[in-house]
Each structure stands twice: as structure tokens, then as C-alpha cells.
Image 1: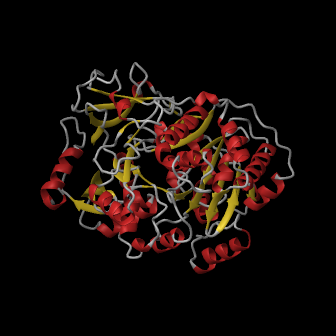
Image 2 (image 1 turned 45 degrees about the vertical axis):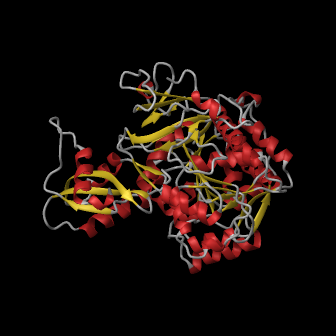
Image 3 (image 1 turned 180 degrees about the horizontal axis):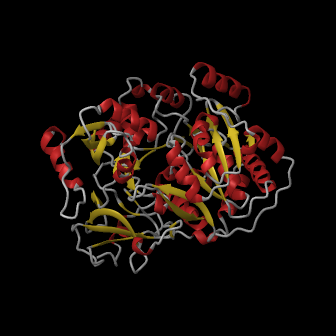
Length: 566
């Protein structure tokens, strides 16, 4: 079916069929090219504080030199647990420049989730913003972490940072108490890393495209997250693919500086890829540390023009629901890129009406550095598909025997390309790939004669909450530790705000366990977006003849009980 790649005929004239990541010897070469080309350009704006490409270059070199001075073996894993603050990109790039592998961590992780990622990755060093140090303190004794770098939100904001840190600590009280003062934890403050690193020698390591760059963790169907091994080549390829796809629009923006709204968290693969795409073109990133603060977010957007706005459907809808959003100046907005979760036709229509800029939906996943398919960037009409494969991406749709299916027939989507990972860290990867080397995405799709792909269902039972993967097995394994729960099962149900919400069916031990007890336990043990928003008590769960819980039956039950959600 896909041997003729019908999607290529749909490409705009100036989008190439393929890209060549091998024009770079390493990811570091790409970064340094960006720093040299755009040294005086503003690279990040956060809370009114601007850093140039030259500033980020120098700060990342200081981080790299400090790391090398710690005597950590080349290729070691360094963890990064921060929101979108000015020090995020210098730290990540510094880790890579020093010859190490970066594993980004969701700062909202609970101790349990953090412990798993640290132990599975083998991370020896962690950079963490102190708002989230409490979770680290809970588990550090059970990990291989030998050094901690503690940062405050305002550490790279100069005098403004003093005010920011004071407000965060004293007024908003957003820094839970922690105690990492024991000398055995080997704690260094981030400003000291920058200060010391500037005066330390830096030895550029020999790196190559085939070397590991990012160990990005994704949800796992067994209840434990898996580390996708992303090489330097994977990352370079993804940036080049996206840049090529955006070119029909970006090449026509005739302004000195192009601003990209960075409200998506940089620890998420989608935002990380976009940061590299932006750097290649000298974009300025408007960093938004807390996009949930919608009034504050809108205030940030009001302060400068913005040209490119990537987001998940939840964020687009949340902004549209704010009464003041429509008063912003959208005259510069040229690209509204939707990803991470399914965009809805209703939100897309409202967004176009308010901003004048069409929402373009795409599909990607951690395992392919957030690149896969996208709708043509110049299309103004929302078509409900996830678009067509990007440059150098090949997609086949197969049946259970790995045989290609016909056009408009449902099958498993499998993907191949220079952006696709080689496999998961410390895992047997045999079953994740076809014999021809295509990665099995786990998504059920159909492809039409033009190459446009419609997402039909997920093979896995994964729930997609505001663009984040939530796996029922993980939630169930945690919640079974809650006193009073005999059995439980988790499904995703439609949600106007989040795309999907987590619903848990519980077989209680007795009548003493309450929904409040369950919610409280979930909040203590799970990241917020993983917590069940809906709880239903049942006397038994539907099971197969071998005792496997039939989640599909529970989904059907929910729809029968709640026909309005259909």
C-alpha cells in the first residue's frame, strides 16, 4: 500500500521529501553553529528577563566544565528536573556538551515515580529546582545519585530573580520544606556551578551522531515507565524534519526576531524538539513556567508579538475560555501547532475565529522525538486527520500478521525514519519492531489514497490526559496499595477540558472505604494528571476466562451509564 508513498504528492513545493542529518558530525556541532550564528539574538524571555544565544552558550559551557570537573565517566546519565525557567536550556545543553546523557524528569513526579526513573537510568547527578526538592529527599537514599545541584526559580534572572524567589518562597509558599543539608548528599547551588564552571577548563569530548543524547522516559504498559534511547542523530533529524515542514510559513515571516511561545514543558519531548528547531533558525522562546496560571499566561503574551504557538488542545481551549484572551494582538501569529493529544474540531474552529490563525494538527511520540505526521502547514481547514508523514518518515499500516492493509482499512501504524529510536533502555526490543525495522506505535489508524492518516484507536489501553500518557496498569498497581481496595481497574473517559480523564472502578473490601480516602491516597502517590477524577464502586470487575480484567467492557459500561458522553 505505502510503497509508492502517496503523501509525497501532497507536500508543498518548498518542503523536501527527505532531510540529511548526517550533514552534522554531532548534535553539539548543531548547537555550536546556532550559538555562533545568532550570538546577539535574544534566545529566551522569562518574566521579562532576556538571555541571548551568547548568554546561553556561556552558561552551558560553565555547566559542562563544572560537570567534567566532578570526574563522572563520559556517557554517564545526568538528570534534569526543572520547569521552563532560563536555566533549563543552558543546563541541558551543558550536560550534552560535557559528553553526558540527559534524562529529563517531570518536576511534578512523586517520589515513587522519581525513584524509578533515577534507578532505571542510573543517573549519578541531578539538577533540580528547589520547589521539587522534597520529592527527591524522599527517595535519594534509594538511588545512585552522588551529586545534587539545587536551583531556585529566579537563579538566572538577576535582580528580578531575587524578587521572584522571595515571592515564590514567602508569599506564594510554593517551596515545600526539605532537608538536603547533610554533607553526604554533596549539594551544590546552581549559581555556584555557573561561577565555578566559568573558571574551570573545558575539554570538548569527541562525540558522534550515533552516541546517546537523551534518555526520555515514556509510560509503560507494565506499570513502569520505559526509557527511549534517543541518539544525537535522532534528535538532529527531528529538528530538521520539523524545520523543513514549517518552512512554507516561516520563510515568509519578514521580522528581525521570530518568537515561539514555549508553554509546553521543556522536559516533554515535543517542546524539546521544538527548542532545537527554533535554535536552528534563531528564534526567541517566550518561556512560560506555569501555563496553568491562565491570567498570568495571557499577561505574558500581551508583552511581545508571538509568531509560533505550539500547544496541546487542552491549552488552546483553556486560553479560549479566558475572557481576556480575545483582546490580545494576534497579528503576528502564523503557526498554531497542535500535538500531544487529539485536537477537537470545536476548539480548532474557535481558535481560528478568535486568532485568525488555523490550528494544524500533527502526531508524534517520544520514541520518534515527537515527529511523525502533520497536516500541511499552509492548510486553513481543519480536517480531523493527523496529517501525512513528514520528510524522511515512512509509515506502513499492517494487520496482525504484519501484512499491509488497503487504503481506508484499519491496521497497526508502524513508523521508520532517522528520528526513530533504536530501542528502549535495558529492554528486549525484539517485539517493538517489525522484521523490516519499523517501530510498532501501538496506534490503530487508516490511511487514505492521498496518504492522510486518521487515528482510530489505541491498541494499548493508554489514557491521554492533556497530552500526557497515562497507563492503567501503573495507576492500578499504585492504587492497590490503598487500604480497603480489593481490586481496581482504570479506563479513560471523554473529558471536555483534558481530552480524557482517568476513571477508576473499585471493588472495596467493605463499606468503610470512601471516595475521599481514595482521592487522598492518589494525590499522595501519583502525579496530578494521573489521579483518578472519577471513582465508581462495583461488586466485581468483568474478566476473561483466564482472569484478565476486560477494560473494554468497563468502557462500554461507562458509555451505557453516561450516554451524554458519546
